[in-house]
Length: 454
Image (cartoon, rainbow, N blue to C red; front, side, top):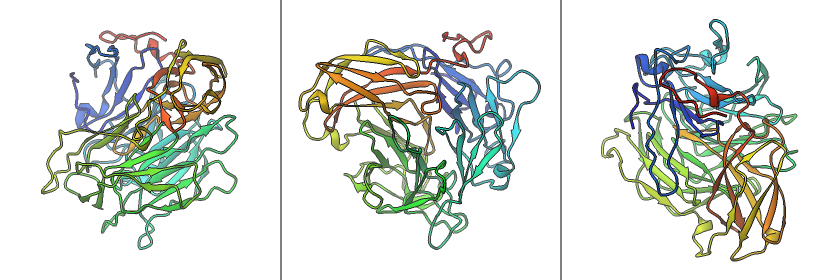
């Protein structure tokens, strides 16, 4: 595959168009920082795709050059791009813009709180809240924004950090990772976010905790949970059973080339359903030291693919080995359940049937169904991550699923649908929820680009 400009430290999300294209924005140095690149997957099970990236910086580019930006899906189906720097370790880009670019002149919105917290706020964590507002976490701060004006609705308390340094941060280069607690129908509980790991400015002291908050709760405060070891540059993976895996990273330093050491091989499981103080358990260790530029993602068969590491730390090579980690739910020798999904395109609030369900341990009355949103992950930022347990009614070998009610609970996009027979998940099938309200499937109408349609 080929790109025309450098994607090093860009941002990405999966679009809600009918093809599930990936958009990649920003990148490394000069023209690359303005890059807007689109990839349309065209493979199928057992068949390699042949499409390549589409890009033309003269016809389509960002309004501002960005290195280390975050991309997020807005409730209206357009793409929010936030933050970054104008180039590698250069001046900040403390602002945001929207794709497709709105009609008119310059539409960039400046953000004084990003300017104030430079350089500790790269790849800020962003998600849509059930109210329709936007949650954003950067450095050791967090706030809620209006999704249309991007003005601050609410400033949240600063995140706790280390006992010896309250200035510890959670975004690059003090890199932690964020996940959303699963949302369960009827979606009346406030959405909670959890951020694990990080480090401190100055003499680096890597953090050994996770902090969580329900941003829209009346008296929102951070809850601190101790991890069994310090962890900088973690990767967090949402699993089909509503838990998270925490892997990779280092115990000393900050994120970047040659700035961290002492790799953390301990894999952790975080279970949001358990009481505070009991949510984190220790799993079997990973095999390969993985520090800067490492990744972990969920595979369709519910295993976890772990890759990367280009630390430039003495004694640690650039890694080309990959690992496939088998979570506990697949480690019991139980046969995964199976199902058919006749309809892969769901409207908000609609009801849809999965059929020909085959369970090999439990019974249909205890079946669970989860929807894991498509993500694009880099530097601990799993852009687009979301876990939903929808309302279901099951009988015989079929279940009727009620789709999430709106774009605030589930922004438009693609999801992996898993069924769970007791602890054991099926392989997933892809379903799109909420359509393509911003008509990204018809964008961009420019030479050299092939919009897939809505």
